[in-house]
Image 1 (cartoon, rainbow, N blue to C red):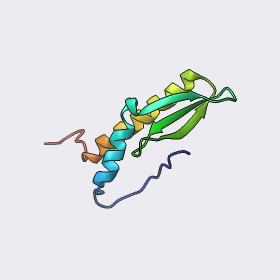
Image 2: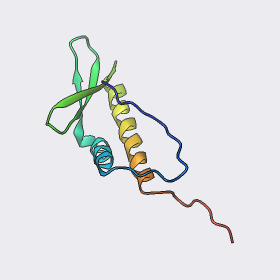
Image 3: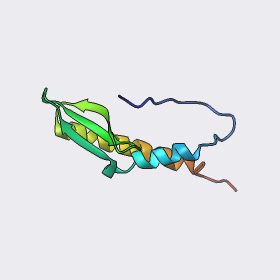
Image 4: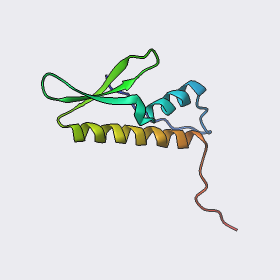
Length: 94
């Protein structure tokens, strides 16, 4: 299974639920991820979910590619957590 990414435009700042933030924090922690080797030789990335089971996320040809996929997923969720804190001022004018 893969995560579904969706973009949305808002006229006001969106209200992110506490449940969504908790799941992003969980996904942003690399300790909740693992890589397993499948019988066909591919490597599968899996994430630990709430009920202590592992959910398959992606499949890659090498361990390095699988770890890179995990790293990019962790980075993605860290960005989502930063966004949830609110807008960042990049420049002010006087």
